[in-house]
Image (cartoon, rainbow, N blue to C red):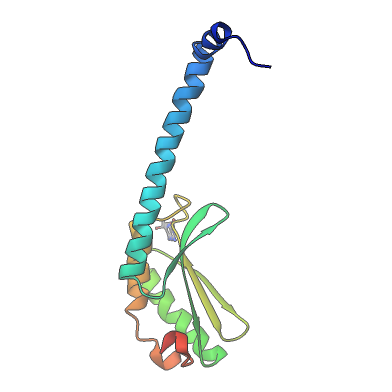
Length: 142
Ligand SMILES: C[C@H](O)[C@H](O)[C@H]1CNC2=NC(N)=NC(=O)C2=N1
């Protein structure tokens, strides 16, 4: 059943309807801007931070990278090297050593619940570490 056009126009012109229409437009614009920012960040990550990926965990955008180390003890040495860099930066990653030789690192800014420049800086500094002697040589990290 369709409403008469006269009644439709009265509904659309109500303040509430105008508010919904405006808010919807604003929300769509913000969504487009967020998507553009996310794509931009994605391109930065792929171009400047080899090995790192953007992930979305429960609505939180993070930088993520994984490595395989030779031994559990070398894994702990790996984490200590990363911890030293993080402490020097005053910005700290989430560190995981699982299944004895799998290192996973997530970097995000807890204070804002997402990504900031500090996260990209820390990822770049981790990429600058000499970790080769700790890593299991696999096709992924030749
Ligand atoms: C006071 C101290 O600098 C802040 O609490 C820092 C510490 N390291 C941090 N690390 C990360 N990843 N996110 C933060 O919000 C953060 N805050």
